[in-house]
Length: 122
Figure 1: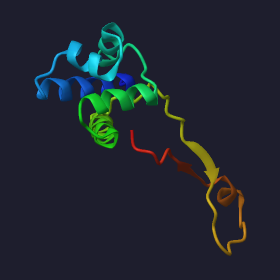
Figure 2: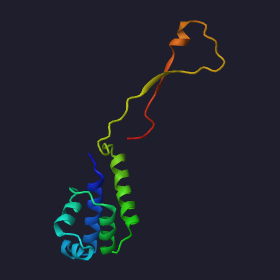
Figure 3: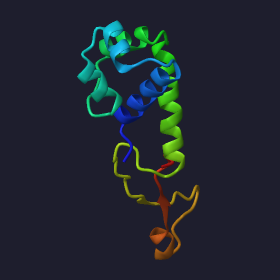
Figure 4: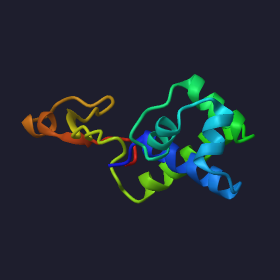
């Protein structure tokens, strides 16, 4: 199961490491406790928008760039058929097929059904 907080933490960690900065440096600059920042990077704590803004400012990276990377990673997970956020798929519904301008001649036409499946790729 892919969680957004895990993807977000991974992106923040990669950005920090690319910059060659320590958790201590970023936490001091963002004014966030070292332990909390560590938990956010591990995907164990959900960061508020204010906290994310402070971390991104400390990393000199726009929040939109962080979200873009998270979105790309989320898309990759979906393409690999990993259930995102553990959301169950709804089963397909069976509905009668509409036949324009058709008059029922016998009971077979009324029994005709088609499958409507979930249109969202998973």
